[in-house]
Image (cartoon, rainbow over all chains, first blue to last red; front, side, top):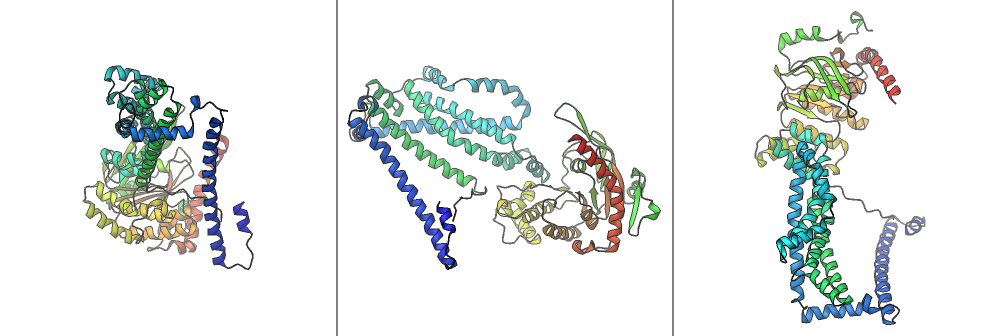
Length: 289
Length: 294
């Protein structure tokens, strides 16, 4: 609609006036979108608050926005039952980042190795398929038994979840490398190491980076589920102990914390991606003026 | 059929398997590239065997600019791949500078039909990869690359990435990337086929200028007969697949040539007609086959 009305420009307008008008319209649209976003948030949280306050929805089972805020305030000022709040966030974050980092490195290495070695890939294919078919979260139980209640078992679970996501993407990325680019590098004098370093890895990079968004989510799942299964600290434990005391607000408050952590990490991954693939053409922003 | 006696001025014809006429050249000067009875077969996805070229004989003298024309699917690119050492022949021998080809030859430069520049490298770094891969320091390689950037007219675009360049400019990057290694043999696989007509003529002229400053032997594959004649010392005509060399024509048009004007010379038109008569049969055969396959 905005685009259509912009097309009906009085013939008397000068070029500058038309451009100015177009700019104003783009700005106006942005403002409208932002206002509507805030309104939507208010409507959702407001109706939740309203329905629980009037008793239409049971706030004992489904929590209440003000209750969640109070719970967060309490955790921040008084600490949680298992220690200060910041410590829980840091522990979960540490497990997530360690699992993410290790899983990513191993995934890329394994992906490039199998992607460049056809024989090895053919030999390992059925085993990898079998491993991938298992719901890997159940491995958490093994890790808790084998590695104990400490951080290691959570890192291991996060690592396994991340590994497979990154591995499959890296492998696919390597297999999709343009054969002309490979031939060109070899003809220009590249040895095997340089071909991998200079062509295969950068070329597979967009696939690998695309997987990192999903992979970080999996790392967080691994850490939190690991804490669920048995731990002494962390956001996952916060959720399971809130669940055990029928504290719905506590579960939601922990979810808010996880959302903040996940969104921050997402922003970091996006920033890293933009830095690493600067050479890629920008997706043009489709704005009608 | 073209009678060699009636062949027009400026075009000498070698008919038949080609090997007889060609061997005399080899004996006199030693050839840069020599293909003798070369056959290449591929396994197809359905378990069959596809013969791309059969009994190809070709001999190219040092410093000679040769073009290869032929219908679609006659194995022109396959032939280049064999000379470059990207693949091995199923039969026959491929020799470069008198030695059989084993793997990739460092004296060979190759310009691809599609873009083969590295999209994640800037223009400067793209051109500098050759010297880098051949063991020069980063500073040396970049200095050389700057020199080549000037030669191919890309000054001011050093820091751009390939996606920020036009098709013609990317071709310039490819050319500089290849020529910076001073190849003694330059293989070009329909390098300009994706360019618009004006850019193409421009690039053809630039290629001739750049080539005249080297002593490289060139094998230039194209489906465009005009381009083939305008550039070449010799034009090879290949048959419909499985391809073999049908005939070769010496082009005695004077150099330096201006590709955009040479096409209007009456002599050029005569040569074109002669070779086209020869090529047409093969194009028709290839076209009929495609129709039946489709």
